Length: 122
Image (cartoon, rainbow, N blue to C red):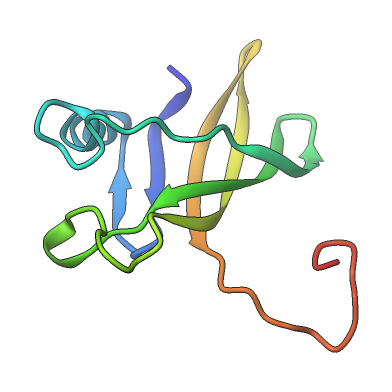
């Protein structure tokens, strides 16, 4: 119930999943028996920033780590780092007294050295 009935999720590879029913099927595959994330414990997300767009809509950006994927959608092994830095962006809408995710975008983070420092790259 965290996700709206018509949720849109875009993973870091650009694959889109639309609707709660489709998302449930995808998550059951990924985290269910035999799925690539079946025995994985993910670290908690860290909230970076939250913005109120209006009284019924907010965005949230969180720092997160996800597993590196290798060939054939298998978890990376060998010399590859097992964890990849991510930013997870949520658009939430009020549904009665509850908030639901209406869109969730995952972004891989490739560090870049800016010639100046900002609040986010210090």
